[in-house]
Image 1 (cartoon, rainbow, N blue to C red):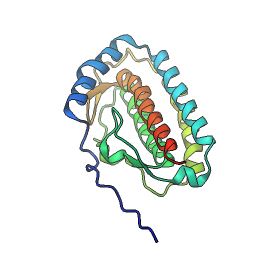
Image 2 (image 1 turned 90 degrees about the vertical axis):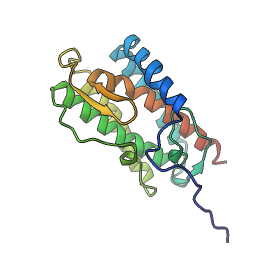
Image 3 (image 1 turned 120 degrees about the vertical axis):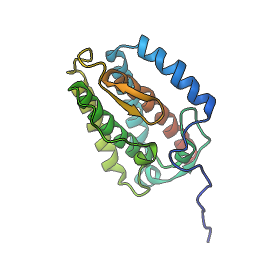
Length: 196
């Protein structure tokens, strides 16, 4: 009988390598916040979601639940490298619901929100694959529907802190959603490549 041991990875919340974090915080995201519209970002978010749904739809429950160790991808914390496709989608559910709540609250000038760290948004190992995918589909629909109703110019000074990138307003949180989704779509592709 073969026993598969857990790989030794950094603790959740350890963050990104310093250079990668600095480039993201001071170059990539400020440029995105200046040059991307809400509608462009929502279309990117929805396109990434569609790709994730298509990737997941070709997998059995067993494949969706199989954890695979992948190389660390740019933007991916070391502790997230040993997930299944279902765990990755559940992480997107947790973060997406949290971001949507933050965006809606900030758009109403409410920044009295609980502080959340990256360790707080890690998925459980044992998630129900099909339920997780269905939940993701609903989240994507709600995210687009609700954010398209927001006046992002109304309370630009109302901010909530991202654990890695500091205080962001509702517009910035919305523009952050698509790149986050893209990182985890690449993670799902890397997991699927190792299922064979």
